[in-house]
Length: 221
Image 1: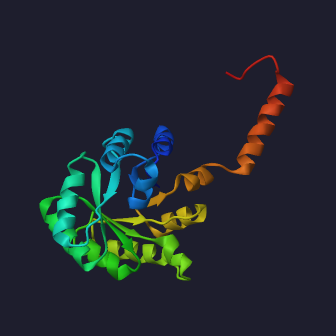
Image 2: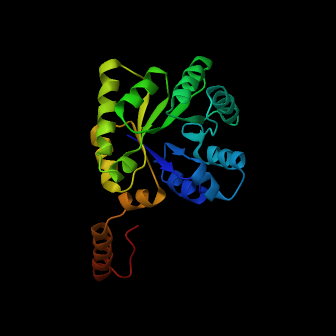
Image 3: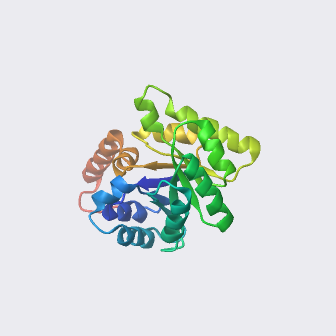
């Protein structure tokens, strides 16, 4: 499963990229507003940090298909690894289909059930993003939608990648992997939670303490 960061903060992206495990970045208008710099400037900076093998999703903000397509053409012209993020509305699905025909990669966002995701797949979306955490907030099982979309993809051979979004905690990451998601996108705080464990820290502290009792004057390497 690919790991994406859901952020527009460059320092967070640099840190994850330095580990060699970052496959992409997703942004939205809310995250972009927190970045403190012009939208295009920030997308270009993210693109440069993650490199061409990874992708960055940049959201369109219009409501009509024709305008969405224009914006999708614009943001994807900024760098070869930029994906146009388009909401799952009737106009959005129409825009995705037009983008598909024009060779413009898309990420269909704000997906809350498998039928919405199915339409995005049929329209040729590059990614489809079910919002797990927001569904959980309403008392539904958000991960069930991820599992359903992964199964639909397998049955019908769609090429769209299932991107589990609105990830809230480490358990969501494991559940997404087990559900068959192609990608999980998460805040930097969640990434830090999944890489750290108190028993790892305690074990390392014990190992180093024991090493000092054996050869305090020597380093192991």
